[in-house]
Image (tube, rainbow, N blue to C red; front, side, top):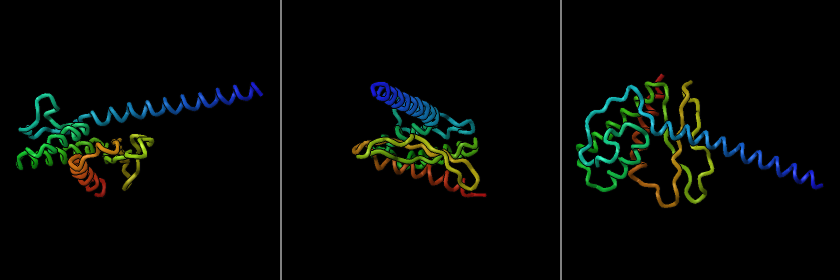
Length: 162
């Protein structure tokens, strides 16, 4: 009986370790994707209200989160908001041109962040990466949701074309 319990404990430990290493690899890939600048991306100018310490190019998916903070202040001039929308559309197009179309999703909240941070689906015979931003009950912002909607709408339009 003692050997059986020891064996079960060892097997459960191996299973937990295997799952943690799988999640570690997934989060590494997730981090690489949200910080990646696609090659076809070309900057169209600088948003005037962007602090120098942030990414002024807004050329990665992670920079959408930073841009949402700028928008949340409510001090972004209309011309800068239009430029921001253009940059977000260009970013989605650039990922698509590299054959890496991406859609962004949220998960978490009260239930926690137990899903994988990314997934892959097939849409119109194209592989589409789904990136999931984890959020708590209090940190999901309407501004970030608005910017993600612009990105996702552009990507959806691109992958829906034949």
